[in-house]
Amino acid sequence: MELLKNKILQEGKVLSESVLKVDSFLNHQIDPELMQEIGKEFATRFADSNITKILSIESSGIAPAMMAGLYLGVPVIFARKRKSLTLTDHLYTSSVHSFTKNETNDISVSKDFLLADDVVLVIDDFLANGQAVHGLVDIIEQAKAQLAGVGIVIEKGFQPGGAAIREQGIRVESLANIRSLVNGKVEFFSEVNAK
Image 1: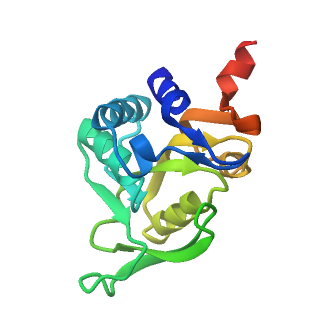
Image 2 (image 1 turned 90 degrees about the vertical axis):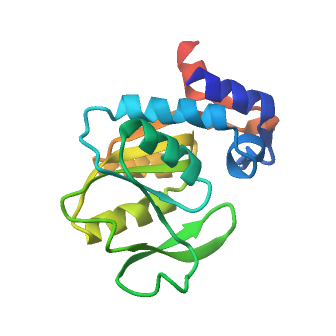
């Protein structure tokens, strides 16, 4: 998705060979027009998947998931990382380790919103080591729902998460797949393949 790649090149900040900061449009401040286009792209890619729900994780996955839900015409559920006074039992839970924050959280989704007859699309902002996706897929399996696939805004293809998830036979659609962040430069897989 060229619009997203251009935004990454213009506004993304490479903090190390494994960390890309995109808080000006995705993780802290959100670019609504970009999110709208991201939502349309996910809806197009998964149009024939009979999706009934979208599942994401708080907080950075919510904006792209909402826009995809708008275009697919389905509800969006997000897994919570923190306990809530109103969300205390009757939950699906899984444990997720965050590479960026170097912390592990139990995520949870109410059993009221994820049912066995649902066809679920997982959407998240980043895919690096795949821990968030594994946790969300675990919740879908607990609900005995069907996984349609995984939509990722930015994949760090040089890290093992995407390959491991694809090896399980799970469909992964990444809108921007980064090959390298070496020397402070963002290099996408499509650029390398085109040469």
